Length: 599
Picture 1: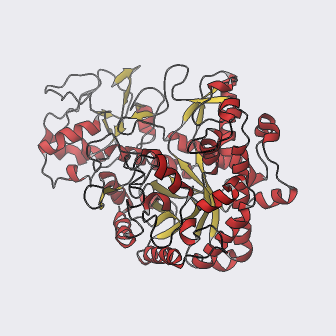
Picture 2: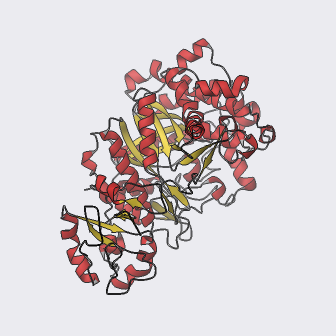
Picture 3: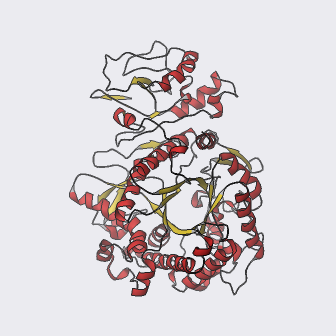
């Protein structure tokens, strides 16, 4: 804890998780010893603090518990905790309370609204705490708002060789070189346990489930001519019906990274524009088969992430162009161009032949993050704008306005494909909504030397994303349980950016979450509560400021296969125990989400 200029800097506002912790005010020493894991805890008046403020320290655990409700309800009191809250809970709660205690089960974990600064880990100013004091209730969100959780077929279905499914491009990659690649075909087993899984989703209280359909499961070689796999078609019929029977709306992604290996081998995948015709046939099959019940479609998931990682930087690509050396990439732009054409073609098909009778909506999902200038220099301010255009504008400029951002045309030149006039007309306005996946954000630093641009940045943007700014600070806080920088205000910034630049479209937050790989017990994901609560807070703040957000989906519903990380990261709010017959169990964060959705 720091005291700078009379302001108190601390971590989060919370409730019953304080349980067996002692509290001090503004540097005053408590009369009882604080465990080493605890830096400091306070109960403070909602005013600027000074050393003369009286202490509200509670000297014993029982007194703290009995006073908690009174303190929480008082308009003059805020309860603040510190960065090591997870360690404290892990090491102390079970010493003090029985297994039936609310503190242990997590049912009464209540996190109020948080505002972060860019100072140091787990810090936020008291002024921000005051500004975002009340945590919104579910009922304060718009009517028909979708609260959900999501997965993708590739990452949870398992049964890779069952039910007539053909191999996908990721089967081939995973089996050859990935952690847990040998387990991939059989783990999670959503394909065989979907009825049980729907009951777990129902337990959470969500009203929507974001899922994807495996192209390889319904069309094993990717083509209608090659034959429709009726077992695969029936599986998704059963899953969709099961969801609806339990009051859960399916939110369906048509292509979530994976597609038939035969398409890749025969056409070179999305490098070949003829894939648009095969994708259209696949979409038509889905609209005809499931469109009477599916009312929310997303065509593709994060196409620009595929372009950047797989083609520009060559990850998981057996035959990348040599642009990692030359820094003059072309394939990434070709692939994304064909993704956009596939998307627009599917939207045109749906609007002309299905939407009027089926009454659904269709959009696409992009990866997103907020870029803040590395310094106050104009070149860094411009760098933040460029990285935004090269990540978000790469997709949204075409699907809203019909062409790529001007800065991309200038910096990429003839390596950036052109839309024909007819394609521009088809692409422009080809969204009923935009889905955004948001996890974290970065600073943007001007960089003219492309050899210094690495990892996930676009060489042509002439900018580099940084964890730390020129003053050595970082955005938000560092979550030690996931080694992730958490900047929930970045979600708000992106929502506002899209509202202002892209005609205030309807938006769904289609992925938002954090892993739990650096904890002993994956069920005690208390750090995830803070993550979800702060992002829900900023979602509500964006809505209150005019952004048309229609839903929020936690990533992930269940633990998932996370590509090069295998099954190690524990993303799910429903944990899958690989050592106990794939038993499903809601985590503490899952129970917190349930409580939020049911109160």
